[in-house]
Image (cartoon, rainbow, N blue to C red; front, side):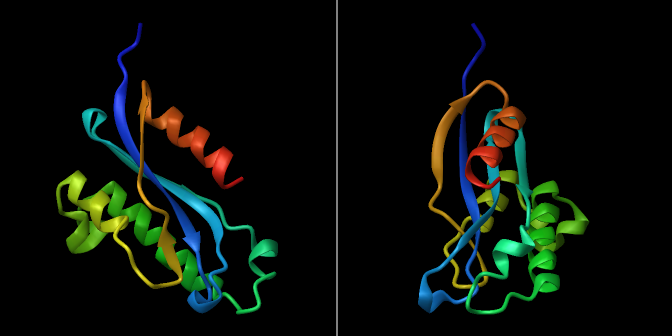
Length: 127
């Protein structure tokens, strides 16, 4: 039997107008301490994003989501936050904020392979 590892994840959401409380799931960020894993996957469906009443700046949105990926990867490319320990980076990424990119509450689970779990969640919750 394969060992189960605790993981935590949050869904990345695009919220173009906070007052309307409309959002579209565009990605997932997953953290597994025991596997030293922190990664995000995202996909922007331009047609669905155009359905919002508030226009979405796609270049800005791409830049913000790319920043999530750089912070997950860590190092200099992730800026000051990217240099933090992996757990701190995950907590920073999933902190409550009122911007165009927000995260859902953090959800825990058990997995044997964090990458496989991220792929599965991404397909279930985003695609």
